[in-house]
Image (cartoon, rainbow, N blue to C red; front, top):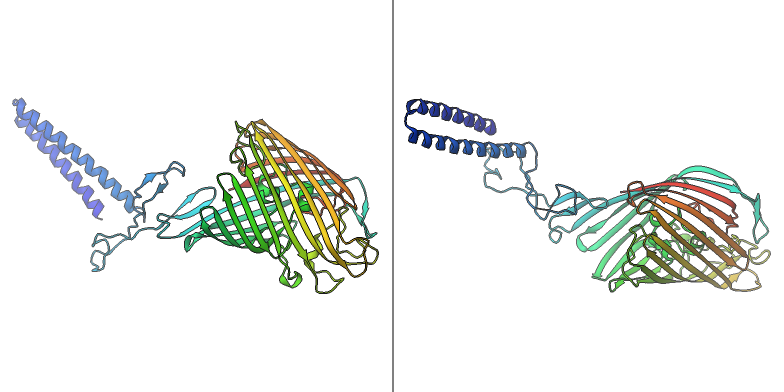
Amino acid sequence: MLAKLTQVMLEVFAALTTVSASYCLAQNVEASPSLTALQQQIDYQAAQIDELTKLLGGKQAAAASPFGAALGREDKSRMPGSVLGDPLILEKPTDVTSDNSSNASGSHPTLNFYADYDRGFVVRAFDPPKHPFELNVSGWIQFRHHAFDRDVASWTDSAGGTRLVRDRNAFDIERGRLVFSGFAVDQRLTYFLQLDGDTDGAHSVDFFDYWWGWQLTDSFQLQFGKRKVSASRQWLLGARRTRFIDRPMANDFFRPDRTVGIFGVGTIGDNGHYELMVGNGYHTANLPNLITDDRFTFAATNYFDSRGNIGGQIVDFDCTRNPLVRFGHSFVYSPNTSDAIGIPLGEADFLRLSDGTRLTQTGALAAGVTVSEYDIVFYGLDAIFKWRGWSFDSEVFMRWIDNIIADAPLPDDSLEQYGFYTEGGYFLIPKKLDVNARYSQVKGEQGTASEYAAGFNWYPLGKPQLKASFDVTVLDGSPLQNTASDILVGDDGILFRSQLQAEF
């Protein structure tokens, strides 16, 4: 109402000024000095009217929204229109007859947080020390088709059991991830929660990672909760940044899984990284404590980027001008016990021999004998190289299975398993199209299995956030059972995979 009244008054004032000026011109048409002075007065009043009109327009725009104008400097790293550092003023409608009107006293309630986009949807405080809370919501999804053409009809394990090898042809959502991260209560108290859904896992949603972290120093953080066991480089880099549609067969055969425990994560200088861990087990991702043992698993990993930060991708997406090199290694010690000799706990069931037979399966190492306890020692070496669109990466795995205990004598109480992968690629079109090749192998006393693969990735937007991929993999036997990579135990044949991956 006040705005409309002010507008009417301005229009009346302008009309009266025009009439007055016309009258004066008529009376003083012969007096040029007076005419000049009058014209200057008219111009000055017109400028005043113009300025008042602009101010009125700004007030009307602010009144049309419950939020007032935001004051602050522009931050070019954010979306256009974003501001940084100054709280928004929230103007609430007030009753002019009210004795408690906040506007009457000249004060305004303010907003302490703002929303933005920064590699995900974020809610941040204008003054984090005063309001210590931040939420980042991000996600990604992999839509995939896979087809397997078998060369054999069945495979026979070390215990003498024969199982079918099936042809396969299916669409699936392999990874549908939603991530919540940030800090709360204190800027040093961080949190991370990752949900995962996939159609080859009973179409269910799983709590993959969830932990709290406390930043003890600028270079070291303690984390408490569930996350990846700290070993194997490509496992720790994550499934979004693999060179092919999924990790190498050898990597998935040797790597550990997730566990609940205490993790120390730190940096050494500008380009060194390390992790230390004590947790429930080598492979206890979703196991209840009723089927796990009373022994902890210990792990450590570290790497150095000797010629500068190599980043979070294996491929050379940025076509680096200077060569980048990373060297690293990992170690895990994981004892596995049981409540009764010859009756293994669920925690021990994951480990397989080099032909794919479960170690705890009756007859795996000797006829009629069941293994229930063993110790794992894992060691891995890894390297990554990038330069001008070229990239190569490799890992070597060694796993010793010692102190094997069963319900009857065994020919030997220890086993050794070895493996490696090497892969490389080149961007034919920078940031658009790359081609890749891979070879991996698993070797042990029960046999040797190999993987050969070739494929490409297309980035239609020139960004890693949207990627279309295709690869072909030749499997010469498989000791691995992993639906995530579409490689199953006993596979001998050709695997075709196509995938569209998008993230926000």
